[in-house]
Image (cartoon, rainbow, N blue to C red; front, top):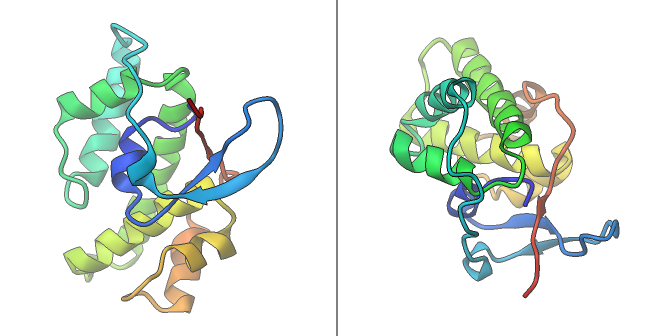
Length: 162
């Protein structure tokens, strides 16, 4: 699974996934309630990984109040924690840059919508992320500004059907 399983809880209304792990680019939107959390795949993580995860958890603590311990556990579920950590660091950087550009003038509800939009953008192209996020507070122009801070390529979730 490319994105660790915390995304399942974070994706409020949708999740993009690549259903065929044999190279088929069949991208679909699925209900996150139909996804089950995978097993822990790594007993330990390096101190460098823990340091980065701490930064990620701290960046999103206000909009996604999950303990550091749970966040670390979720990263342990990933096949490749380093690539997930990189994605989440990119998300944290984009989130913090947008918030800093607004100089503290954002409500918690706006911050949650910004977070949801950046999460979506991490998995899909800009236009699709804005459309699928079903924004209620941010305008189209504001949404475009938010996603402009996330410059990495989209990286959909891989889901293994059982």
